[in-house]
Image 1 (cartoon, rainbow, N blue to C red):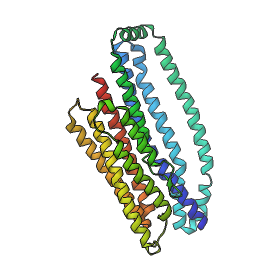
Image 2 (image 1 turned 90 degrees about the horizontal axis):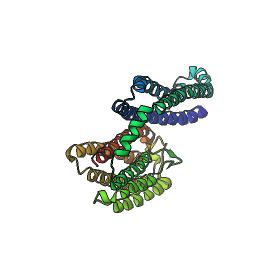
Image 3 (image 1 turned 180 degrees about the vertical axis):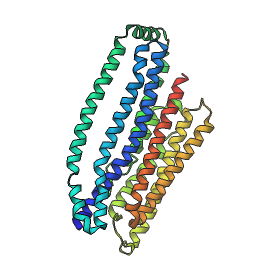
Image 4 (image 1 turned 60 degrees about the vertical axis):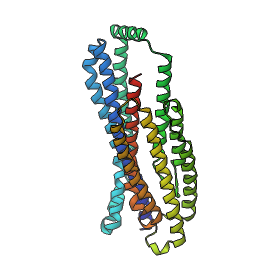
Length: 347
């Protein structure tokens, strides 16, 4: 029974992570393909690439279907975690459930082969499609003529480059906000998140007045202190709160509250920097969107403080926390992309 319990805990965590990342990947994939193919459609319509335009919907459908299938096939084998949990409850059927669980590795291999084969098919079709576009001399010549005749100031080019660097640094930094604990230490340290988000804002120092340096330093100090204290005093899997020393609870409550406040302050200042970059636009709508995102992040931090202070609910709150932070990250990256895109479009 102890063996089944151990396996179930690991598998449940794996299912939680693959499902959460799968949902985030689907959202980002749909956003990317929508914008990517919309851009291609615009160019083909504007510059006479009508033959390629007639095949665009098929290529877009094939791309979306391939990525959806890939994500779903990654999640499916991990659903055996549900059977492992059921095996703990239904002792009479435990042997049957665990026998089915034993086929997981074969399912992983099968789904990998299927994804690999379909991926080759998809890549081959995509390659042929873009090769056909390159061979459309009328379309290519028209594009080259427009590019050569379009006068773009070097200053604007440099700004676009800086915006791109800032977005990449910020997006990667946001991903590191996801807490995936192993032995009470996250394999995606939020210290790196702070450094990358700060770097993304520092790149655009000429486009804003707000500095993230002091909030970043404060957040880094609190994050290091939180990590050390949680490693020393934290518990993650006890069922009886009486077994948790009161001293540990008080220390973790204070440290996690300060940590949460520092993280919230840092992200709110990062959003202020984003709003300054968008100063050419009407900021009321943007601030409303950013405030909603801050509410999501605040809920995540509140659950974090509760889970750290009351270790009996740490595991229970892990899934809601991951879901909240994944939604927050996905929506924030999308908002950063839209704001930067609107800004560069006005140059």
